Length: 236
Image (cartoon, rainbow, N blue to C red; front, side, top):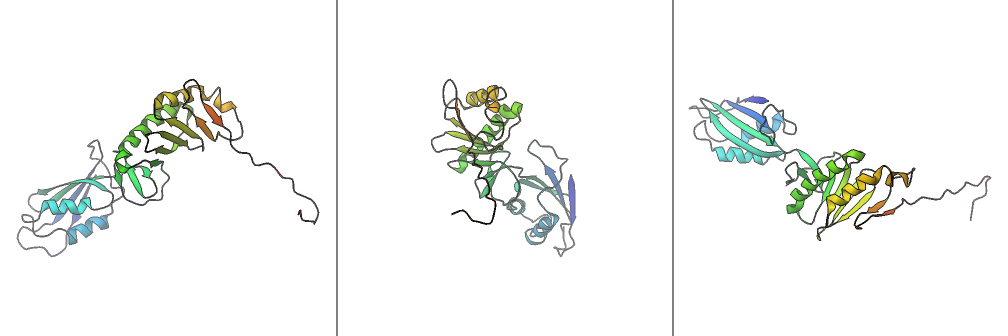
């Protein structure tokens, strides 16, 4: 999707810049996209405050950098369009998960800093450089879990490179450091005719899948029911 921003501001009299054309692409190069996170007001702000000079003298690198500084812009390309236009191609970040409590991870596994109040899985890792690995494993884990229709709420990669998953049901799966996908696939393969029948009221609290020939489970804690006393006296 293309957006044309007309400029009605004072510009140099010779070769003035009159129009900015915004084209939005996604990570695959498809261009028939709409702006999701960037507003027309932000684009107009750049046009009025960041573009210096006329069609010939403006610095395209500076213009590109101004777009890149927008929090939701991952990449931008800028070129002149004779005789008085500027073509800007932008790619917005597509949020895949929260990175801890202070940032987001996009679909490339890159960390970027924008605050949003959206329900997304949480990725936790020893350093930001590990976000790409966590994102890749998230995709693999999700495919393995698909047959039992369970989603990932949190993935934790420890400094010792051990993996732990918390499902949206609240169940924690301890995968360890080795054969993590094989262990998760084993959990899925026996879930419906074994694990799911252990408790019909609440999901399991914890499943340790690090055993070579099986796994250990922990049932959820059940709060005992305390009957209410009748009458006006208080229990002491």
